[in-house]
Image 1: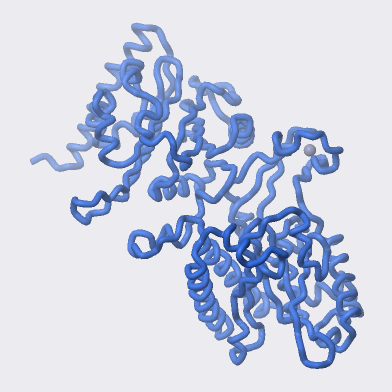
Image 2: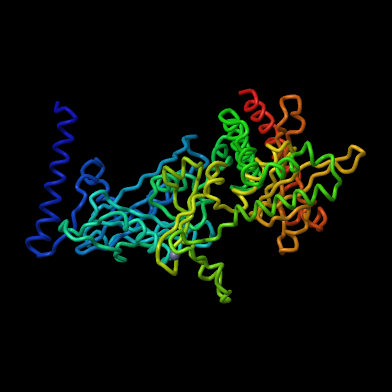
Length: 533
Ligand SMILES: [Zn+2]
């Protein structure tokens, strides 16, 4: 018997030889065409190469795809042939067969395919259902000249933005031509466009890997998010929730609050008064004292609201709302007079990319990329989740600033709630005594608008609120766990009655309540763990 390692070597050598004889030598010597460097290894290390070529030249291959689930092929045209990037995913579990759940996906990168075989390929052939909306446009820039196989992906971004992204990556990366000589800029012939079904968890998990490899730009990150329903779906058939529905989102926000509490605990360990010291220095010692809960609770209601308003005005001036201000020339589309076609151009925004290591240290999970129309330079806007980075950078939106304000109010001694509106806004509430009869009430604080106690503000913006949830974890120790709660506060922020709210929600009241209960239990358990640590 020949050992398998030798078999493998023979196999690789034979593959390389056949490749040279059949493809490279005829093209170079006989036809006089120059070919780009081809990735012999991606051929040879894949033992299934012959089957693959056979598979590609098999006209009936479409049938096989449909049996296995979904498959997608993209071709990149180059001189003398095409590169084929094939993304295959299969996780269908048809009733009848064994219980076996196949959840596999493979990407065959940049296989060189001669024009003859290319004729057998049809883009998008295997996309079965043409009328569902779970498909997204996918662009792939596959650079055949790059030794490391530069391959960049664009998920649901328009072509101009994808080109901007490819140029952004290329600017820091010298790319050679096929002779290994001059640096080459963007070449649109390496871009392929296809559509991709994203309702398949196997496809999404593959996209997630490419995203974390910093090779993907997307207009929205929902598709890449890992929701509770993605994890439990296969095991718990009782869940009727749709992906990204209420149960998924409330779990995401509960996790977010838990990580805020964890960071608070860590900060307290290292430097207990860290935020208070910052406030005394920046806001003033006297102002900070009069804002503390101990002092404000003794004053009149009018004075309470005025003191809070004074602080929020300072807050907004110190932490301005970030739109798209260029870090190079300082310009923003929001400085310019409206032209009437905003929205169609989308400002300077290119898309979301995976954060760099430094950005991930500030707990950023995604970074926005901007291309300035004035100076043609790129700006990154990492969405930091760590208080220290937000304090230092002073670049944020309601997400960053609601979290920061929530932490400020807690360190000033307030019982506080972190409030999330599903229609993409966040703010804070604090508990204030009302008069001297022992009654209390929650008061609304919006850090981006510098607004105190105007709960109907958002409705006046024309928002149709579906879910607004207040998350609270009592800062006082274990005795006060009944203060840890998640409350549906939608009705306080709209003048619509509950029936109208329910109609907009389109989910069963019972499911909503049980999801809230489930997350509340988890929050109580987790915050107990955090305070015990
Ligand atoms: Zn600029």
